[in-house]
Structures are given as structure tokens and as C-alpha cells.
Amino acid sequence: MEEFKMIIAGLIGSIITIIIKAIIDTRTDNVQYKRELKKLVFQRKTDAIERAMSWFQEAIDCYSMMQMGYNELGTKYNPVVLSKIESSLIKALGLYNESPIRLNQIYLYYDFSDVEYLFGTRESMEFINSTIASIGVLDQDARALRLVGKDDESLEIQQLQARAIELFKELPEAINTQIAHITEIQNIIRREYKSYLA
Image (cartoon, rainbow, N blue to C red; front, top):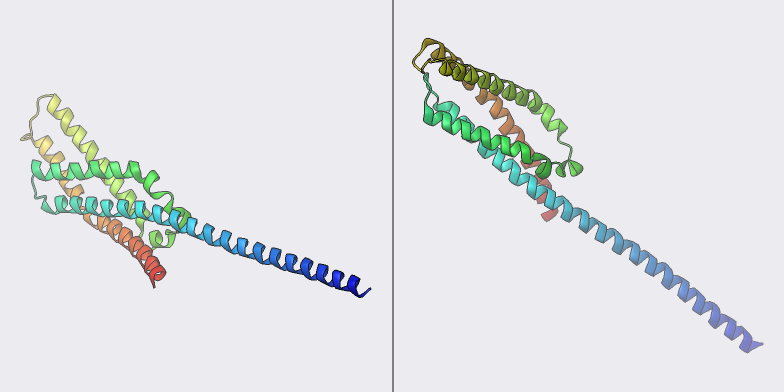
């Protein structure tokens, strides 16, 4: 009987050891799974941030180039300055077209709506877009006048050019808003990453 109790005690001890080991293994696997999941999310977040930060910096550079052009505008059309502005607008269009690929993922991890609200970013962008559209209409009107024989010295074309210059000079404040908005987003992201490194 004593041997039977010893066998039962040994069997119970073995079963308890197996159960405890299974619980520990399950807990370890769970901790390992969570660690791997956090690592994967962190890597994906980092990839999204790297793409977005690159886009943000290119946008700031593009806006700065626009501002230089607007600041260099005098009272008369200057083809060199207009070429600089035109190339910055083309770059801006390219950045806009790339934004879904390079920016959309970052919004999975961040909500910048408070920054957009603080800076009035949407209103600023709407103003920039409507102003550039108005300048485009003036340019088309000037082209139409050229097609009917008017040259750049004609009063009609000079008036259109003067109005376009006025509109161009209204843009720097809205562009400053866009630059400040993007800079603040970059600062938010950098502060978060510094906290990871601390």
C-alpha cells in the first residue's frame, strides 16, 4: 500500500510539474508573441514615419522655393522668377500625387487634426489652391489675347499680369501656415522618437 501511495504521489507530482510547465510555457509564448507584435508594429510605424518625414521635408523645401519666388516678384513679370515659381508648383503637384503612398500610413498611428485646427491648415490650403486657380485663369486669358495678336506690351495683357502678381503676393502668409503646420508635425514625431531612445 505504501508503494501504491508513493507511485500515486510521484504520478501526481509529475502531473503537477507538467501542468506548471505548460502554464509557464503558455505564458512565455504569450509574452513572446506580444513582444514580437510590438516589434512588428514599431517597425511598420518607423517605415511609415520615414516615408512621411521625407515627404514633409520635400514639401517644406518646395514651399520655401515658392516663397523665394514670390518674394522676388517685382511689379513687372519676370520670366526667371516665374520659371522658379512654375517649377515649384510642378514639384508641389508631384508631391500631392505622391501623398497617398507616402503619407496615408502615418495616419494609422497619429491623429494630427488638432495641429491642423490650430494652424488653420485646411483653410490655408483652400486659399492657396483657389489663388493658384485664379492665376491660371489669368494666364489662360493672356494666352487667348496672344492668339488674337496681342503682345506682352499690350494694356490688356499687362493688366492681367499685374493682377496675377497681386495674387502671387497674397500667397506667402498661407504658405507660412503650411510650413508651420508641417514643422509642428515633424516636431511631434521627433519628440516621440526621442522618448523611445531615452
